[in-house]
Length: 270
Image 1 (spheres, rainbow, N blue to C red):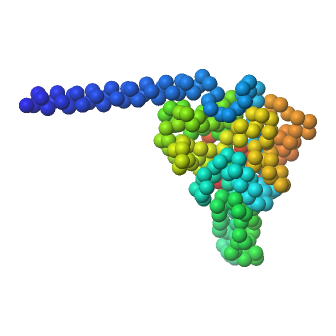
Image 2 (cartoon, helix red, strand yellow):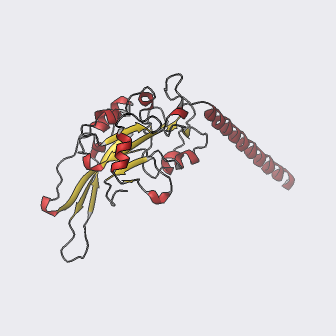
Image 3 (cartoon, one colour):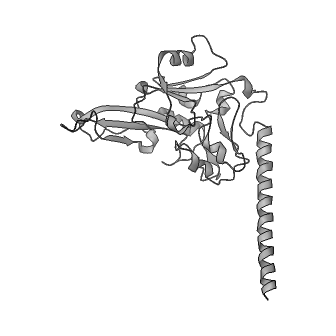
């Protein structure tokens, strides 16, 4: 009897190992397939990602929190309705004055983003005389050069394109959510209809055809600056922006090396 039980246990263990090896082999096959082609990106035939290097910049001082960029992104990319799904969004920061006698230079920091800022922002309940500083910060995928999301994807569905975009192939994504958990910027979500991980792609279907991302196109104050580092144009806005401003990235201590740059970024922004 003991021998029989031991044998069954051994067979069960062996079966589990074989199943695990089969899953690993499938994952490797999928990862290899993704690396061979430029996936299902909706890029036009003939587009060479090696000939471009896309960059997105933000001037925080110019953002007025109108929400047009969020609405344009939702419409252009068919982002699911609801307050949980955004490829780009806006946050409002309100920094209160410090309490008298506290010895501090600034007080409490309040952050909100009602409906991602899509409908603008209601008046704050904080009295004007108590506000030290208030501003808006656009957010989206930070296009990390050392992206945690690409590192944890078990099948290679999330990958770095040679042109600087971080993309997701819906044909390979298994909806495990690992990339969503790994992203330190909260820029990913699982599409409730397709069960595929989504994020900002810089409107890849537009920029590969010579157009600007929808959010950049609609911005009334030109707070969003976008361009191709390998193909600067006359009076190139990207080059002028970098030369004129001292730029920063979000959460630089994490070592993700974001390729999204911010000017006039307050230290309270995370």
